[in-house]
Length: 165
Ligand SMILES: [Fe+2]
Image 1 (tube, rainbow, N blue to C red):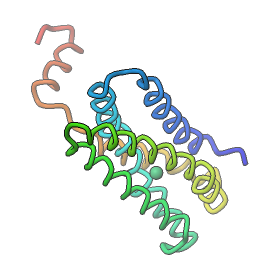
Image 2: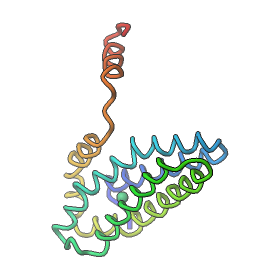
Image 3: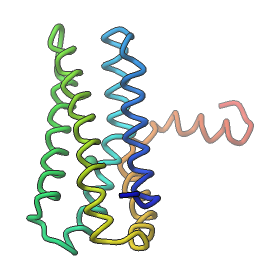
Image 4: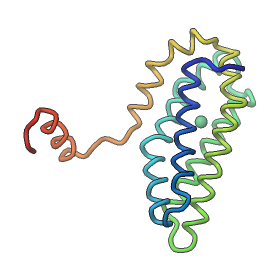
């Protein structure tokens, strides 16, 4: 099945995360872990929240909250959140195992969404309806991104105006 443009955009986000993870394979453990947690905060969690707040409820309107694709997707999101928490708390030798577990789950989750969830969404909603959800998806993801600190925001706004902070 060829996915609608909006679903292809979500798939492209998956591909970008996995490429980012693969690109760090030779880096040191601290670098890999801190980069993965930054990726989680800035991209993966906002992406998951947009799915949870917009895409999944829309799918539930057409199917049922108890549909297997919905239940599996949401439980997979919980598994990702659990693994991210475990990685944040892991110390010493446990960090490499926790980092590898989150990377593995991310890869499995992306594969599941692309092979099962997205085709189900497309079949149930149709490409026009999915295209109409784009602003809500973008707003939900944006609302979930960490806010810059007030000093960082000030520096960014003065830099935009061409002034020194
Ligand atoms: Fe997801």
